[in-house]
Amino acid sequence: MTDDEVLSLTTAWRTRWGGTPITYQLRGRHADRWVRFHSLPGSKRYAGTEDEYEIILDRHRRVLTDLGAQERLYVMAVYFEDEKGRISPDPRHPGAVPWLTIEPDDDSPFVVPARICVTMISFDRQTLDPLLRAAADEELIDVIIAPLDLRWLYGPYDGGADVIAATSHDRDVLKSRYADWLSSHPSGM
Image 1 (cartoon, rainbow, N blue to C red):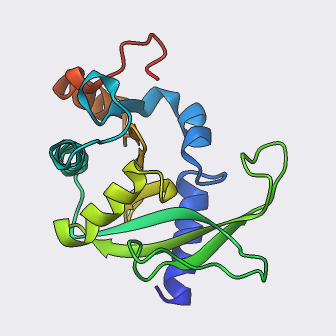
Image 2 (cartoon, rainbow, N blue to C red; image 1 turned 90 degrees about the horizontal axis):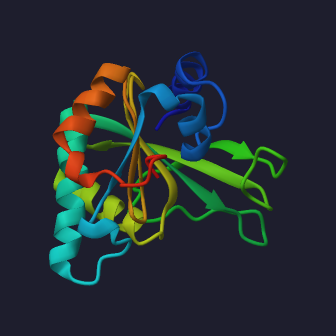
């Protein structure tokens, strides 16, 4: 991404969402549009077979498609600096550049500074599946996938995905369509 594209994202993020792009914080601020889907039957957290990975990837792709994922998407993820202050983006997050720094404080889940790196990717299996699989295995953390207009957010993690839909109606449609993927816990967690 160019410096201008990063600046444009920063402006759009502040206008649309504000705050830090960390899913659990966004979930609390936008509870009226939030829903969580589990990625495996029985709320199983991690895949144990290739067939289970395919279920996870299929569920992610289906929800992203229903959200209206277009040809290009932003992908954000958290990275930590090494002892020399460098970050090494993951090859499954190609072209990622540093975007925001999260300092440890009362609002941060981190005890050391974290860097959110961002890139734009294509919505295709070759590009997206390795990234989704890394999130499912907790090898990439605090991942957020969003369209370029940031109208919705998709946060895959180890065990499922948090969605903040564009509207509460959109959230309700997804909840109805994928009711079997919802948690049985009253909080939706």
